Picture: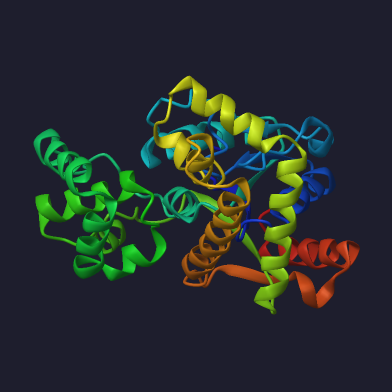
Length: 315
């Protein structure tokens, strides 16, 4: 099997679109296991606001790359790709189908497009300079610079994600090449996998936004405020605290804003994030799109997915 491409089913889409439930159902139907492609679910202790599936929701299906990294630990795209490749190999060796489920487009595409990280440009001095600028002038200044240099990257990276902003600016300073172009140049010759990609979307964007707003309410009911307070109290506010739902609550914990004001920012931030996710995924012509609000019947959605998988001949 070493020369033969391994099968890989991808279920992608924006936040709150229904990826988790569909991925689990497909794993049950197709003898698969789930690999998370979510840049925040990898962290331990960040559970409710990152919408990690509960044990009951997993329905006995093994889930990988969830809660594997301490929240203060840095974890790069290259780290993710290396770990995901290991999990895919292991799942395939056991005769099961790996199902990649998530909304972090950079993780998904870096894995399936076999991006080469071996020659990744990096320079401690440049990164230190950019980090110092961030501390002195704030994220907005660096983000505006990125928008002028590389609007394609700026469109899909939020201003709060200072790690990726600094990385994109670092690449540009070292190579003179925009980060978006740099990624394309460093794609591998071909994917390592027999791919089938399914994307979830909504014809009426308001239906997705309604789901997002409802999810925020459920998160609050399930203890999100208490969880975020505990994380905030640990003072371990590293990359992990960029997750939507955590950073927006900091003003509330500091008594600088009301809870409802912060929850409104979480809803707004989640809607904006969903828009960026869709912008990213729509560029990938390999994705078979399913519009959830057109069908609105889970059994029918499953039948469509199984037909897509059968047509792809990954099994």
